Length: 383
Figure 1 (cartoon, helix red, strand yellow):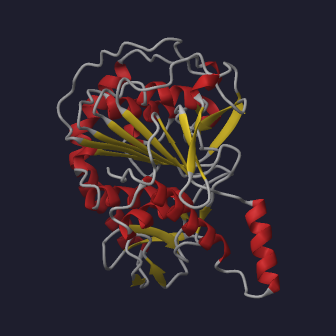
Figure 2 (cartoon, one colour; figure 1 turned 90 degrees about the vertical axis):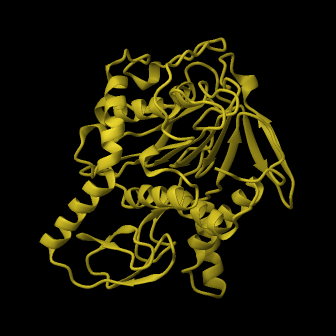
Figure 3 (tube, rainbow, N blue to C red; figure 1 turned 30 degrees about the vertical axis):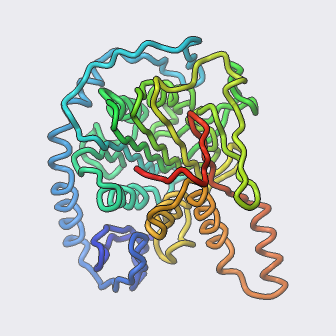
């Protein structure tokens, strides 16, 4: 089925939806927008104009920095399965760069156009996240890098090298007071752990658009790139909307939520002889599901527009409860996902049976991990 784009009449966010839809509920503000027939040529012109206007300043200010990073020697092997982290805490000496502002973000939305495992909601995810970070999080527009397959600039396509270098840009020159965000919406998977640092015996990985030829990006490399360089006073939030993403940053502590307001922190650092911590900063990961679970890309949340379960539930929770704690954030996201999975089943015994089967077949619980332990029900979530 063909698709078309429409801009919300209320908040202005751009959404992609099936061509036969005549109204849509916005994934950002939940208002209804009527969709009129649009000439494809006019729609194409509008999309090109919007993309050009929205990214002009960002490209001018950051392309030079990304090119310089590309020109530097790549510290990692080309094969994802051969990455080997250092065994001791590294000494970081990143050269400072011109100020990007105290808030900086990298948003990756991988749709896998032309591939059998294409995703429909990832582009909407990064657009919604960008809007959220600017309007709610106070992130300057020129401090947000968006990588997606709709970009004409080759440096903004979510290839393995582009994602690697965008991650380096995110943390380069970070200083006390900086707030960083890494958001990835796409596919994730697991492979056998070859260096003995995983509790379950499996490494987690992200799939760039060119994973068939370039390979995936292992959790070991992600940790070394965006976790270890965090100096004292720097805070990183990773929002990973993929399958098998529970420990995708290889952070030492994984939070286990229990009934009521109880929780425990599991220490995953004891398994590894490699250093997986920061250089004094704080890294927090919000993942779509546990390492053995899968995440969904679905229309169940808005009715007509595909989104990732984690991205949608995260934005909704923070907007609905501005001063929520990390514990409440995880619980609220879980409630939204569970409700979306079952809301369309009929009432009665058959509906209950279907809900139970769906929950057992596709369990998905958002996960929280961190470079340090804290009380999740007293520490407030802030970007």
